[in-house]
Image (cartoon, rainbow, N blue to C red; front, side, top):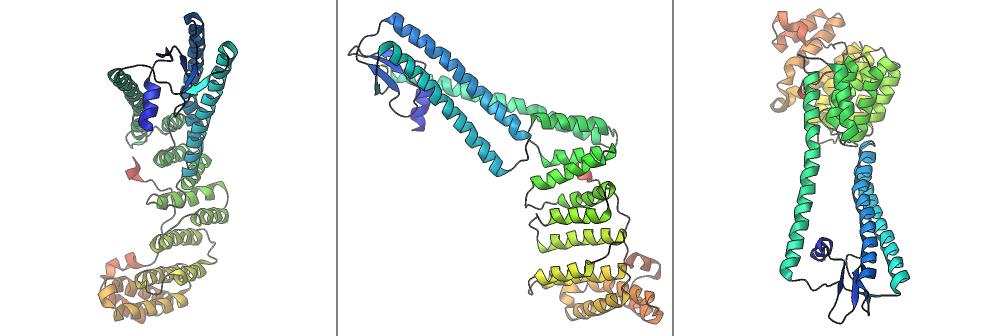
Length: 404
């Protein structure tokens, strides 16, 4: 059937008179009954006028063919990308093209009926040699290839714009306002991409457009749907930072959790997101609920997944220390060290930091003797002990160098 449609579309003939003297006009059908047959010989002058009308209708149809994908394309790229949206626009494109052909076909049919009377539906099979048909098909395929090449050429500037964007954002140039303009130009012409949103968010931040940067991060997190990618760690950290600038720390946490719940994450990724949230809450003096969220995460982990349970429990003990809940931290470290000692084939490397962290916990509780014993067990030189005390760095905007 596809080959048949190609032959119909590539055939430039629109009218012929068969051996029986019947006049046959080509209509706009693509599958069957592609001709309108009159069992009479229509004068050439009259047939010529019908073909002139047909040529005019073809011009209108070609405009629809060209303008429809262009208009739908520019509408589509200014909406949030989704697979459902893409399928909808493809369906809409087919619907518009089909509707236009049906409408044009009805106009042509009405013209023929009004000038020559009723016709019979028949196949449009002009007496053309097979070699000529192959020539028509060849020319049609050449035009199709030319259109594909043109489309490819139209997308070449997108790579140029991305190159200019990277150039503007590089440490040597730091042309952030220009980078925002380049990104805006890219979005005006080409489909939205996550990486360009990330770059524009960084450029907006450096231009002190914090609200614009925040909105870009929200948009890119929505674009990726349930998928959680490696760049989402930076996006979520910056989301917290920027939302805090625009409102309050508590609202930043609420927005953070709103987007986290949309993502489908592994246990490791969920624990890393909880770590980011917990450090942020401790830094901003809103520590409520941190241990409880770790308990909820531990409950959700399969009992056979001992690795993740162990490391999440380590994070929980670390948070107890930062929360200055030293008694709870000590109990947690006691259990972790006991478990690691009993499973040294799996967690022997972790004993060093666990002993050191428990040592600092005991020191904060006034047990210097117990602390020194743990420091000795850790085997850490005295001058390096401070590096193992649980702590956190003040949150700053995170720049992903690999992005550009």
